[in-house]
Length: 60
Image 1 (cartoon, rainbow, N blue to C red):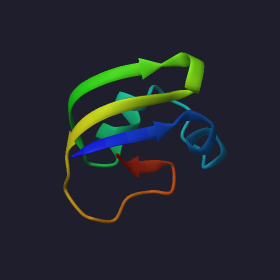
Image 2: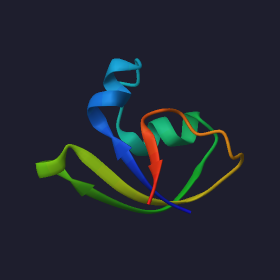
Image 3: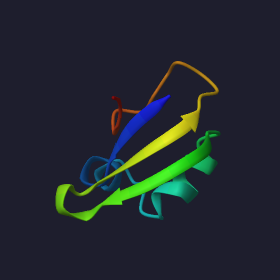
Image 4: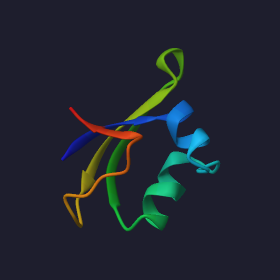
């Protein structure tokens, strides 16, 4: 599953560590990672563990 991790929304939700660390805490396995600083987001390919995604993650 390919997702967009919104850095601003994640920070507002209390997730202040690096996106890959936060994804691991949430139980997701990150297969690939690409930071997109100009858009304040990261694009990741993840191995989903559930269909319930936090509000700062968007399936793309």
